[in-house]
Length: 394
Image (cartoon, rainbow, N blue to C red):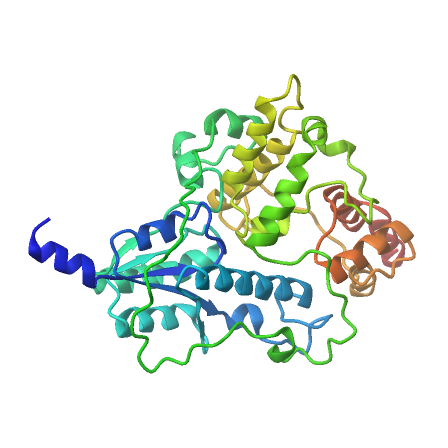
């Protein structure tokens, strides 16, 4: 390394932009930002599209998230900030006025960032947002690194291997995918310090009560606290019961188990990226290696993670996947509609105790057992609720 290169290495500033992936373990974007940078800016932008209060929402929260989900996000951000502070850094929380990409681009320019790192995201809103930021960064000669770490595999690679089309059966997906890569398990005792943030107003993680959702004093606090710390603790506790891991079989779980749910309850932690799916997968494999016999995909615990990746791949590779119209793999159904019955289903007022209990649990906890999800989905689309709608129609 010559003197010029060394000088550049000591003055370079990198930004790691958190969205999902709210963790330090198996975070290749953080590792890439940290490597060779004298200063690292860990950034999260509060998105009004996700958090803005909606007075017309059926329950307190925004149009896209109830208070249970928002609370989980805020707890995850608090935990991430604490982890960064223990390593000499902190989470730089920005508020977007409207478009998150505008806030990120402004910070890239004002802080003289030379390298931007963020976890790739396959959702349509995120793809459009990330393209705006990437286009700005490339025009500004800022290096961009966006690795895949929210899923076990890269959905684009799976689709390419399948001839440009997403595999439409679970088994074909598994055959193409193979074994997932090892997680990036760097241990950080120190993260490079933050540089000058100039005149930016940096916010602490807000309290739920500060977001303008009205009186939420009667809202239940879910038993699942957000954050990487809780995610790793819950995962390790689940995997300690090796017999349970070996015998886990999806269709045999008890969706009515209340005090101790019959599954890991790690889905929200995977959704927000508090837990790496790759790390979870390989930890399960460590348990299997010491076992004489264990269940296999698609019903096993690893099988559930593969189902998750299968869904991400199909949704990424299918235009209009979240709609019926314009979705070539979705059956076109002439749905009958009743706003009154839909609201009764949503609010847990159908008069069917099992269905109502599940929907109330979802509203209060932001979570339900996967077999319970099957129950309420079938009730809505092809069960007694459909019969009730038909009776009203006739």
